[in-house]
Length: 470
Image (cartoon, rainbow, N blue to C red; front, side, top):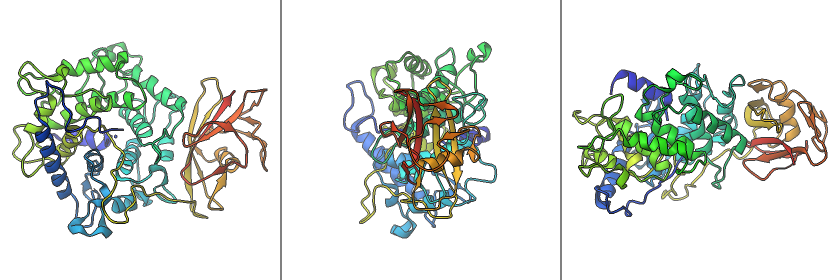
């Protein structure tokens, strides 16, 4: 794998989604058989297990293979069941959760994609990303990178992949009950930016091109087209949408007849193929349909399986390589088994291991964050991460709004709230007052909006949405 590509992959560090295709149900035009797919899954999972360090880790000192968790989940393997030598005290989920909870993670100079990677893989591992620990809320960490000067972008707008993976993480890492965690207004803002950065050829790159005719006319790449395609569909855009169809047609136009591979800017390779197929999977578009079967009866799945070592199970990055690549193997397996950029965790087989783990309450005196959006009904959406130190195992909406006035990132999310203390109905936020049926309402973790009161209970990890309207 070229160094430039490796560096970009680490920076992107990928994401929702969804074992879209059963291994036993294939259209008549499919060329990889159910038996081949089943073998690829079994052997691929076995190889990914060999990537685990002796201490149980997939990430940390010298290791960066946590994307294996999204592949495990798509393949139906619970990350908590992956343990070196069967030592369940070192299972991959517990070790990863402990890493995410440390104050030094991800680094002294983090970027938004660090938290997006963590969110997608924690979710796949069965760790509620908003409730990693008493101090770690990955959803709130992402919210802190909202760009107030260019709403809809997360992280520097020029590095568009941060916004793509925000859509994948915030849309894909759903609640433990399977519901949408973030409000529709935030999802809509992300979709607007995804659409604005689609190139004229139907695809995307990792760079911002919105409003730049020359940039919009440049060539797209396979990788980011797969990711952005998945981001659209993860955000609820149907696969009949014009933008999705344009992206699908872009990918179709890059198929190589003899192998079924996509002709990537980085040369023919397994990882680019894996990202493209993951995007198709996320949109419910079968990569073995007639649309993606070449005149030589080859599909992208055929290409991926042709580059897998058996029985070793690893995948080569390029067909000419003589050894498997960890990254390529993760990307390929996720795609072959029908996954997108994350999937809900599998039910564990380890006795007593729950499907999900999560911090259950605030820890008094331990600083933490909460994710907050404020929608005043005029399109002026504010998004922020609110820092505060709880004084009890629960808190209140009033306390969160009070904290947001001077401890929010980005700042300005809440400039004032009435009443400013005590309890009772929230009558005004940021100077906008209730008026007749138009009042401030609150939703927590995607619940139905209801009248906002200062005494509304707020629990650890809650994603809070305030909205003014009927």
